[in-house]
Image 1: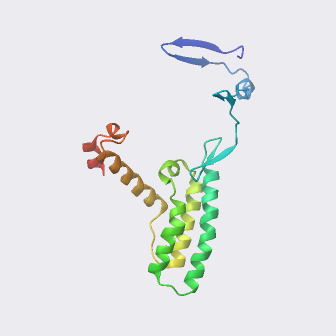
Image 2 (image 1 turned 180 degrees about the vertical axis):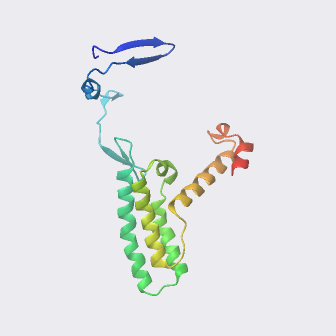
Image 3 (image 1 turned 120 degrees about the vertical axis):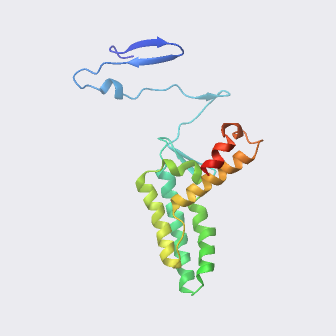
Length: 179
């Protein structure tokens, strides 16, 4: 505890109030050692990132690692889309290939991570969609449109399913008006 911190206790919360003198924030920026997390007698290892259900989760809770992984996979598949285009396949088949191999990668768990992406990450993902549009020669839904559609579908399924754990959190009348 730093000497200039005062603890004010009220109700069930604790607030730390500190005074920064002479613009010296070093006491507040020092990294503190945390005691290891112990579950059932085993210490848990702290990692920089992990992959869970195909989604990269970073220690700092940003989605740049996930976006770069998705981008890399999608760009590899864009090559095959170009090869199919050079084989003179019709746009309908190219669109089907795009939806099955590229869009499915771009949109994997999109409702969980897309809204918290940086603008740069969103532009990177949208660039892949635009590249596919140019290759196929047809208009494709933007990554934001896909995200919005998936969120609406998920919300509708929660509202319509009384056994869903989040059903009580949604007032059906309100959601039906919004959607």
